[in-house]
Amino acid sequence: MKYPDLSWTTPHRPARHRSPDWYWTVATIAVAIAVICGYFGNLLFGIIFILAAIVIIFESKRDKGNEQVTIVKKGIRVGNPLYPVSSIHSFYINEDDSHPHLSLRLNKPLLPSIELELGDMDARKLNDFLAQYLPEEEHEQHLADALVKSLGL
Image (cartoon, rainbow, N blue to C red; front, top):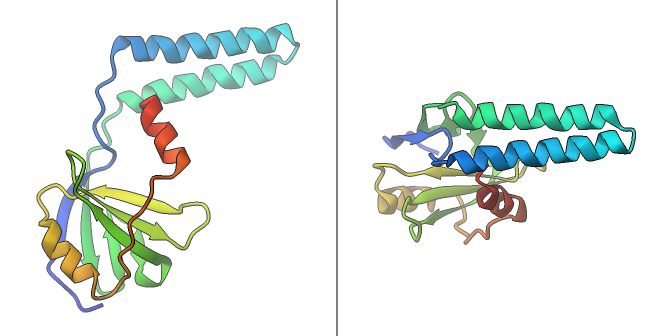
C-alpha cells in the first residue's frame, strides 16, 4: 500500500442519547436477576450481575472522545492500533445510514469486524483508494452487533 493522504476523525463509539428510563431498566433487570440468583442460592452470580450493570451504566455515561483514522503504508490505523492489510479480509462503505461508515471484515476470530464513521471523509475517494488494495464486499450486520445496537449498548 503506498502512503496516501487519507485521514479523518471519527467518534470512538457512536453517540447515543439514553433516556433515564434506559438506566432504570438496566438497574431493574440487574436487581431482578440478582434477587432470583439469591433465591436459588447463587449469591455470587447475583453480585456479578449487579457489578456488570454498574459498569454498563458508568461506561455508557463516559465520553470516550474521538479517534484519528489514518491509512498508512502497512494498513489502517485507528487511534493507536494498526490493522495490517494482511489482516483485513474486505471492506464496505455503507452510505445508506444517516452516518456513513466504513466496515472492515478482519481475519481475526475475536474481532471479526469494525465499523468506523466517515465523518468529513469523502466516501467516493476512500472507496476508490481501498478498492485498489482490498476486495469490496457488502457486509451483513452480525447478530451480536444488531443485538448491541437494539439494546442501546
